[in-house]
Length: 413
Length: 119
Image 1 (cartoon, each protein chain N blue to C red):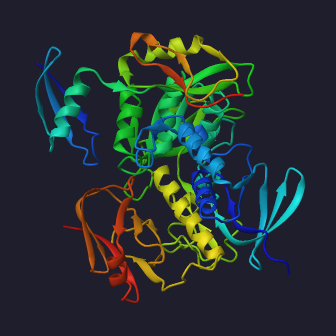
Image 2 (cartoon, each protein chain N blue to C red; image 1 turned 90 degrees about the horizontal axis):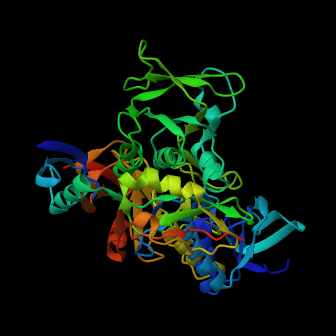
Image 3 (cartoon, rainbow over the protein chains, first blue to last red; image 1 turned 135 degrees about the horizontal axis):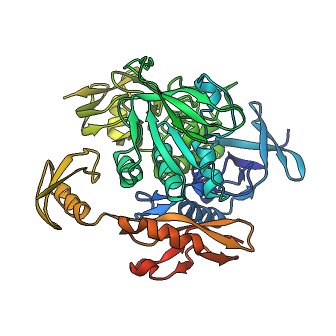
């Protein structure tokens, strides 16, 4: 068999993939970046609000501006970029990657692959909401794409289901562009997004936020005519008698993101809660040549984090391609009390320090994050909308690695 | 004397602030657990400032619209006027990211700048 023509192949040119390809190329690896779309930047291109880059660039940028900087770094790095190229298959032997390019089918042999395919929105069909199936129902990301990339309004009067940050941001965008946003419904008793976004996207414009509410029914034959909103109890059961009809021709869904794993899930171990591949501190999956970074691993809050992880994956993949990445010991990080999202799944010291990201299931004040009874960090406020980042130094990793596994818990003080 | 209530967004604590106002003068701030809360409340109670992000029509380009922002915060109360103004603006392609679309937007001292390029 001939030697691989590529050292590091990166799938997906969002923030994680661009940062990974840049870092791998800078580390001297022959790097190819594959992107199915025509432009680089992923979802950043349609996130025209500010709030990006405070960590990475020390200034507040919009999504397209952040993407522009990553693109400039990428173009400078010497990585080869192929747009309009859809990966069909990743074959574990080799590894080999099959893709459709604008010129036809192409097979790549590479020493390492970085999976950076991002996340997909949970669709309407997954919600099992009774009623008709008219036009006018959009996921928030689709509505954002239509509005902010293509200049098309999704409707005139909108209801938003889900108060995650994308839902809140879309409420403001739609309001500013002249759409009447009737209400934002949130099934949980607390907002899904950042307080900052509740204030600056809803309160600033008098948009009502209905907590413990969901959509009970969808109305309308061809086009959406309205929805029935209903209050729910703590277990999300609708409370009879609380139904109310809200007239609307657009329903915008911000009901969660799911890591994209379709082409790798057949041969890689996934984390059941994150729903992305299990990775260690080098962003290496259970398959040694496959690295993963960004929202395809777990859904992160900040693009700055995603870019930083992409960079680390790119460097690790380049080192692996040269045979210089020590496999080391993988110590499982295990969820304890009050931990839902958790990255990485294994602790290792191959890349020096490691940032552990975790998410709590409900808002808590005055907590201690405890790793294996060895490392403890106090956190004043923990909210589901904001991941907690715990940086572990080399010594801490070494100490934690003596145990067969490390339980991560968040305890009230 | 009037009272305004708000949630502080300076940090994740989310303190519930109460601001006592005498006309446009802030008399007192309570509910804050740190000095940043007081600073936030004083600014918010008198004149909330926000960056505006929206779209401007593009003529002769591949895209129909281009995303823009004010390069510094402008008074929130001007947003309705700002959106009216933006609706009548248009630019000719090509536009480069960072291009000033309108200087001293609504006499706020802020410039309206493109946040994307359009060919």
